[in-house]
Image (tube, rainbow, N blue to C red; front, side, top):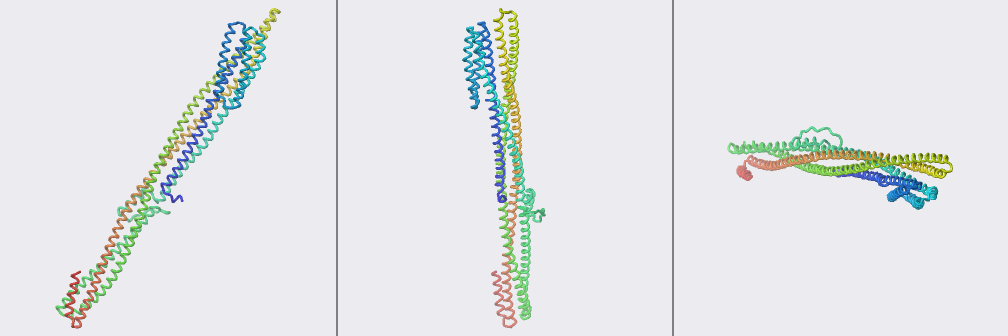
Length: 606
C-alpha cells in the first residue's frame, strides 16, 4: 500500500511525522522546564524565605529573652527604660517576622507546629509582662522566680517548636530540590530519546524518499534530461546504461525508443516496397503504351503481322498486370497494418506522455509539500529558540537565587558569630559571678547580700550559656540547611545549564532536518524539471509518429490509385486482346477501329 502512494503524500506523511515528534519533544521540554521552574520558584518564594523568617524570629526571640533578663538584673531606672525600648523593638520585629512566616506556611503539619509556637509565645509574653512589671517596681526576687520557672519553661517550649519549624522547612527545601533533579533526569532522558529518534527518522525518511524517487525514475535526473533532449532532437541510435530492476521512467524511455525504431523501420520498409510496386506499375504502363504504338504501326504495315506481335505483348501485359495487382494488394495490406501499428504507437506515446506529466505534477506538488515542511521545521526551530530564551530567564533567576542563598548563608554565619560572642559574655559573666561570690565570702556577714546577687547572676549566666548552646545548635541546623540549599541551587543551576545545552542541541538537530528538507526539495525540483523535459520530448516524438502515420496514409492512398491504374491497364489489355483476336479472325478491322477510339476516350476522361 505505501508504494502506491503519491510522492507528495509520502512527503507530507514523513515530514508531518518529523514535525509532530519535534513538537512533542519541545512540549515535553517545556513541561519538564516548568517542573524545574516550579521547584526553583518553590525554593525561592517559600522555603528559603521561610528559613530566613525563622532565623529572624529566633534571633529576635533570643534578643527579647536576653533583654528581659538584663532588665530584671538592672536596678537603675535609666537602664531599665533603655531595655524597655529594646524589648519593644524586639517584640515588634518578632511580630513582623512571625506575620511574614505565617503567610509562607504550606502544609497542615507546619501550620500546627506554628500554632503551638504562637501559643507558647503568647503565653510567654503574658508572663513576660508580669516579669517586667515586677522588675519596674523593684520586686526583683518575684521577677527572678517567674523568669527561672514559668517563663523559662515557655521559652524552651517555644524554642523547641521553632526548631521543629526549621526541620520542616529544611525537609521541604530538600523535597523541592529532589523534585527538580527528578524532573531534570526524566526530561533529559525523554529529550535525548526524542532527539535521537528524530535524527534517525529524518535520515531514514530522506534515504527512503531518495530511493523511491530513483526507483520511479530509474536513473539520475541529469542523465534522464540528457537522454530526453537527444530523443527530442531526433537521435534514436542511443546507447543506454545497463539497469536492473523495474527501471521506472528510464525503462519506459528505452522501450519507447525501441518501439519507435521498430515502427520507423517498418514504415521505411513499407515505403520502399510501395515505391518498388509503383515503379513496376509505371514500367507496365510504358509497356502498354509501347504495345499501343506497335498496334498502330501494325495497322499501317500489316494487321496480321502486328496482331501476332500484339497478342504476345497483350499476354505479357495481362500477366504483369495480374502480378502487379497482387503485389499492390499486398503492399496495401502492409500499409494498412503499418498505419494501425503507428496508431497504436501514437496511443502508447500519449499514455506515456500522460504518465510523465503525472510524474511532473507529483514532483511539483512534492516541491510545495517540501517547502511547507521546511516552513514548519523553521517554526519548530523558532520555538526551540524561545525555549532556550525561557531557560535563560530561569538560569538568571537561579543566579539571583544563588546570590540570595549566599547572602543568607553569610547572615547565618554572622548569627553564629554573634552567638559565640554571647557565649563568651556568658562565660565571663559566670567567672565574674564566681569572683564576686568569693569576694563576698571574704567580706563575711557584710557581703552576704552581695553573695546572693552574685549567685543569682551566676545561675543566670549558666542558663544563658545553656540557652545560647541550644540557640547555637538551632543556628547550626539553619546554617546546615542553608548550605544544603545552596548546594541544591548549584545543582539546579547545573541542571538548567544542561537543559540549555539539550535545547540548543535540539535546535541544531532541527536545523539539520531543515537542511535535509532543502536537499530533498532540490532533488524534487530536478525531478520535476526532468519530467517536464521528458514530456516535451514525448510530445515531439508523438508529433514525429503522427507525421510517419500521415506519410503511411498517403502511401496507402498512392497504392490504391496504383491498384486502380493497374486494373484499368488490365482492362485495356483485355480490350486490346479482343481487338487482336478480331484482327486474326480477319473480320475485326472495323471493330478494332471502333474499339481503339473508345479506349482513347476512356484514357482521355481519366
